[in-house]
Image 1 (cartoon, one colour):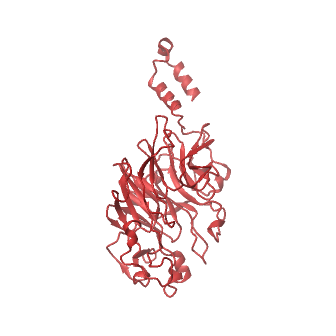
Image 2: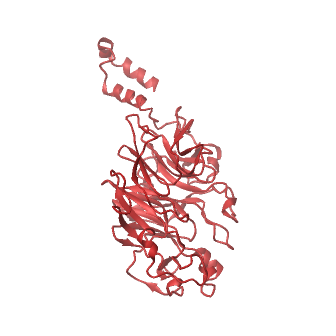
Image 3: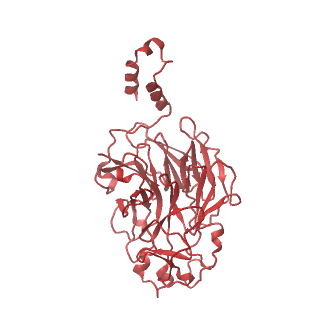
Length: 441
């Protein structure tokens, strides 16, 4: 920055006469960048040796932006390259970690934090930082330096959302019309009278859908909202951790975690291998009033049908053809999609533009099959619809191929964010590594 500023001044003869009070536009921009402590994309950015253990497509590299931040869930990157990380549980009293690259080498060298609550959701929109606990959503004003102006006194936008321990993360997304979308996961596997109990029937109708099992929408600029003045935007979603507003289609897309225990509860209908693969993890494009069918149905990616859940009279083959939304993309069962990002940057090759990255946290219940997931997938999109099959984009987070139990994985990808230069950031909620994936032509 000093070199660039010196050149600008030496090339501007009028400045010698008029002093520094008269600045050319280029100088103003340079000083503004210094004032905002902006992290400029570095032409010399290089990947770490071995790409931090990740396997990536040709031309891509990875570096360790930060390490040991805590159980890092979702993350957001500001226009100046500062990274905000939401921790599931506070570390040293901080539930949001702030990571800054001061020297421009592409790696964080300054760590700070604030917020006393844990949680998952975090986003930046129109000069505000939004973050969620497991019951509430807060908002922080950013000042002209793009810093959180008052970290001790956030606005409380939403409160009183249910937290019964199971599926309690309140992931968030924002559209371009002042709306805030919040996942409220169902505290249940499949809405049985006795949750996760063999022989217990499913409740019809499912009473949980009144306050959970869907996406609720609130106003992004109104304080002290709750169920009383929010609106259920979409229902029939067991649990959504990864969601994103697709700028190309102007619509909300979500990744649902599918149900468990098909073989455990109905061994006469499902063998262990089939149960390890079913049901599909599903991506949905939502609209107001969407109903994705949980708990009454699940999606079978092999039959490519919406199958009636056995707790509601299904036999593994009975299907419904309408009534419920169809998924946009399906994936193998139990991979736990925890992050979704539609890529709008310019660093990656053109085929990635407006495509979807999904962070799969990794399974826990595929036994006797090996646990799967622990990777970042990519789905190409054109004109708002998938234009090809999904593919594994980044793998190697787990540290080894065969994972018998999720605790054996070295890292578990969770959140995704795009940097101002087009870098892709990936959080790990096992030990808190923050990866930065770059592309070099």
